[in-house]
Length: 382
Image (cartoon, rainbow, N blue to C red; front, side, top):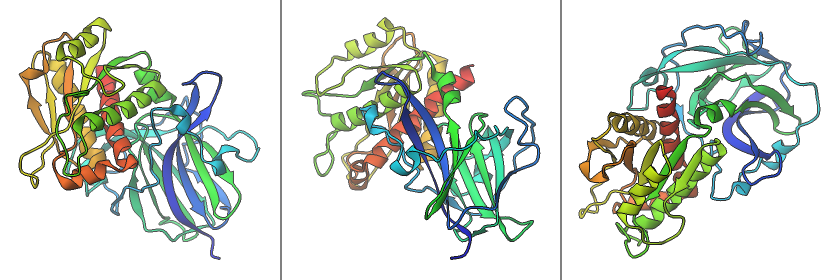
């Protein structure tokens, strides 16, 4: 078997840390599957000086290859954090010396050039980490894998242009964080880059977010062609978003946790009485024409920050889900002293949208997209 990198994927992992229902070590991992161990894992010169020295350079404006959204780039979030456990083959890495911390370069990347298949073009500062696996060839197709988990934005695996027996890996990160590097012997041999999600926690720690799953009880909302109800869709997405925010040390609150009827006044009052930073209302769109579908992110006109939050969530949905929701000013969201946004990322009356939503991975990606938009809004607020 020829020495080669044959596959690459990413996922978020939870490892129980101490007692407590939400006390986990939360990491993002990039895993490279190889037919044998690399002779050397070589980080780019200037990227091995430690986390306190972060040299800056512009990230490249273009990368060859298309975009892959690997099914293994999963978000394993459910209502119970116990479901988010590290996969068995990675849970007990072989003992060895602690890796030297790697520092990250940073620069601005144009999404439209970096990820040419995405319809959205916007500039945002990303940090880059470059390394080479020496002694291996690249047998997988060179491509940019979109992760978009709030920390790892994407990564690219490609043959080295300098030497034929090396594979280059470039990881784009939304936060500056140094990875721990591990290897796990076997077939395939795994090279694992683990990125602590502590920078994500620093952004969201202590932030109060009220999540309002639309409808409930006797109020069913839209009905799909195969009888999926909007009230249930809203609750599933809201629970997944709640789990993500809890893991990030935020203080989320659900206006309903079950299939119960709640008056609109009580939903709005929850945002003000709890001193929330924002109110996120989860709904779906629908239409009398089953062949028509549209997506919306609505925002209250009473606070300028509502539009900024809506824009970040809209952009995150476009990036991760490939949908382009209309940004709509909507006075019917209610007058409260906090930013209010209503997200409608699914057209339930369209047969393909209803079918897609029945997949748990699709449900979790919707929640991750809203989470990403929230995180970026807090980052912009400072």
